[in-house]
Amino acid sequence: MTTSGPALLGSEFALRYPQWQRQYLNALLELDPETLRERVAEAEAAIFKRLEALSESQSGQGERQAIEEALSALEVIKQNSLVQKVHTVHGGGNTLGNSGFDP
Image (cartoon, rainbow, N blue to C red; front, side):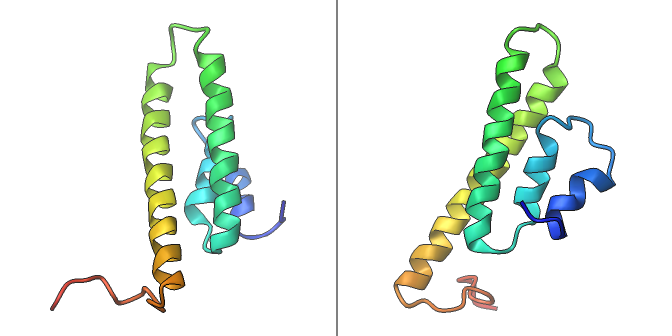
């Protein structure tokens, strides 16, 4: 794990659910495609570990909702990462500025 960049984010802010939000935020802020996969996997692992702990409790509805939203966001990141990879492999080049919309 690096000691600069997004990895330090969790220590700079008060997190409501620190058991998993630090890893989640690191994934959201990662720009390197190779590292992004690792960050997403770390976030998912932390979230699923927390869900196991929450399964033993009736409380935590707000955190469960936050987890649901985080998992949805991570899924979008994974889908976008896959689309970008396929686009690059098939000669699409740079995806910036190529939104598919005509101005």
